[in-house]
Image 1: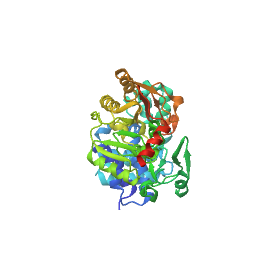
Image 2: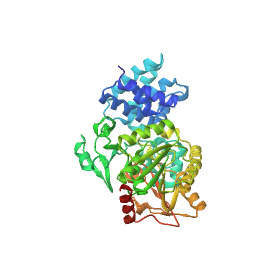
Image 3: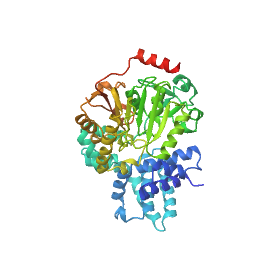
Image 4: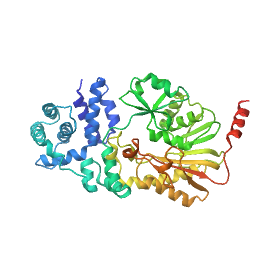
Length: 453
């Protein structure tokens, strides 16, 4: 059986050399490891991928030749070894060096000597290798916090230097672990009493729990019976901003994998209808299975392109537009994402987001609510999209989200930041279509009673 370090090396190489997704590569390579070894392999692989720019900067100071002249396998071993020496306090220097040399022997005939010399030098100079790095400028921050230079510059421009530094510091720390309790199946108190790890209530979210220790959610009986779902507090606030009520008709565009669609159903008490649109048939099928597991029987999955306006046969009380985005608000839990996104891609995504939001607007009834959300931190995909929309759609007006974050409402929406809010970076905007009003609670309850009769 492969060791945790061998698995981590394979994952790092698949990500850095072949563009694989870190989580998928780890799942494939670590299948036979014991839980403790798997956790170590994940820590090594994810940390090495995450800190790649800083590790390469250090390696370039210790290696006499250009890094791109090294064999790919040797460079991967160096990165993995440097990560252990520089960032893992629980790993002894001699173990990090020795095990890295052994790995180098497997991937290169002559690379073991170089790895041994470089890592011994790094262990001897460790105190000064990172201490000399600072984040006085965006370019220096990109090296210290290990992000592409364009991303550090973007956040410097849009957030200001102080907030950008705090955010860059935060994205290399573990993400908060939160779950949403499915009120269609169980209460938060009941689920909390069954959890094998301590948990606290999420502020302002009666269905949210924040876990104090690692927990294999997908391997638990609670997950199998649909009592909970891994979901960040930022993601939970999206459905709260939609604010659906029992008996209403709700449209969820770009609905897979289903966290928000099933949350909408739970907030409605399972009464009413949620049409969940997903373009990809495979993702739509997985979404349907999620709805079944979560007992969200009022959700109907529809395979369609969310960017194409629907036929005007039905107007919805509330519409959620959660289109594809760069995902820059989720870098804590997706170590390879920072190396995938480009500044050019953000512009392309914004154009798609414009189209999906316009299609969602066409489905909202007078007086209805339209919510736009993206799990990113970039003005081009957030406030700029809402600004263009309001310029082109005079029949809509922005309003406070009503999701517990109204004090940060910018006049267009709310931007959550991991560094400030402790959860994924989401932008959430709530828009209302003018020219009518939704039914009152009394009218809605009478309609529900009539429908049940």
